[in-house]
Image (tube, helix red, strand yellow):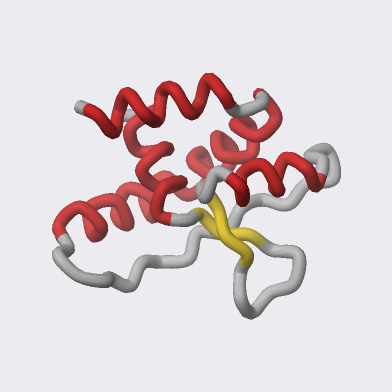
Length: 99
């Protein structure tokens, strides 16, 4: 499938620390991520998904989050300062890499 190949390619391009942020998110919120994936897969129009917040840790540089933003895997949370949430592509990436 094209999507799976794209996400494996994208994972290889990401710096390891960026992927660690996403792996930590998947470990702690796997059920919500998989539920959002199912909602996105079965929807024809815009669908409301659960906000999945990324862990903000001092060991991760701010640039790691900026790279994830640039790749459109995460987005800034609108109501919380210095907080990020998984975007649609981030949900797809984590689903396909962990199935």
